[in-house]
Image (cartoon, rainbow over all chains, first blue to last red; front, side, top):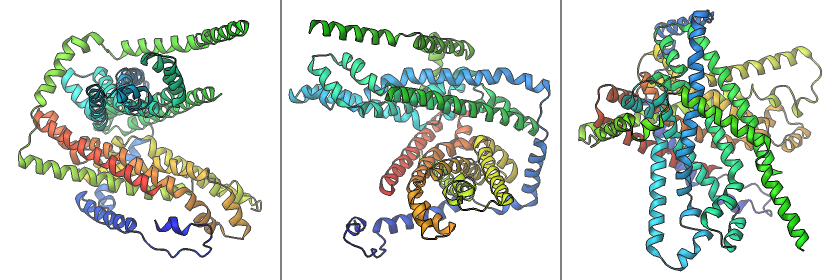
Length: 296
Length: 290
């Protein structure tokens, strides 16, 4: 409040620096949280400097060099690398298949408010309205459940349920990313320009027609771009899923780590780096093409 | 009139045909091939999932989860682990900001050797070389911190300092430090140059320009990024326990490995609550601060 008054163009003197309640309350909270967390997390910075810790870190660093580039080891990696890529692709695909319909149901402007639903409001068909709103809320809750549980935990549970291998990994990425895609899809769809929708409605178009010809063409570039971004994240995630036995390169990483073969770890990390960086570049390029073509 | 409308129809048709142009068809075909390739490679089976063995297995597992273990004793312990996870994510994020702030100034090109601030620099090649080297080193360090997944960092640090939430917090801080360093750097390299130019014209030193010209511009965006990464970190903190870095993750690992499904459901509910709470808090703060 203070700031808004003082920024009036006439006041040439600098406003006295007064701390708002907001600042004071949050600073105190911050400090308390910090102190509490410091105790709770059992922070002991000295541990890093103790001979034991130092020796271990040193062992790790020196153990990494030279990286293990022997053919025996490298030839083992071809399949996990390919599997990681396949896992991320299939997981993202599954996430789209689950997330898109849920995203549509979680779009407020499609389900119960806005111009598409004006008639329902006027006719005061309350039961239909409530049913639609109920569906919307339910779908939102499902989406947020899907995405708050980390994909790693999903993978862990799916490995328990259906056994080892890339299949549970795909399910884990599919479920948790469906939650994120669904939420973001609905946000994108809610923010499209309503003009075309209104004119389509005026011609008597059905809801499906409006969706296909009014909503999707506007939203498609953003939807595709976000999906690609998620695929990038899926690659990163699927490198880790192997830790719980859900296939991919992570499995090898865990084995090497547990066997203290740090030179293999270095090779694997280098491969991860190349993969992640490559996907970053590729996806950024494709996204730029899509978004620039749509704006023309 | 009629002629014009037929023209328009023809145009629309050609546009429609455009949609099925060779270019788009190739992209579509490529996508389908990729899909088929990964479908086979991941041993994915739709039939299994929609009614076969896997579906039965998953449903059985879900049924085993209920009811959640709501005994007071376990709830209290879960509360403690939840707070521990929260503490890890909170301190990890703070550590990340510290690391990022140390490295970001060195890894911003416009602060180190190019652009407005260095137009007047006399051509002293060795200073320039030193600055470029510092820049490249900082950039490489950030990349290294960022590319190694937090789980691997946690493994390394558990190995170095022992079990508990402390290595988890360090792992989060180090990995996120790399991420934030990159994001902050991008923000810093894209600042508005006019205020800087104006300050420079008054004869302000480089440090003054940094404090009065650059930082006020980048701060809101950096705070927003930090809060956003905090949201990511609370999820990652849940995972880190898997390698022995404390918090909910460790208990989840125990619960899954020892078939304590009722407890697992309680822990999952705890994750849901803490993640939702942090998301809401961070969204609220972002709205207030930016």
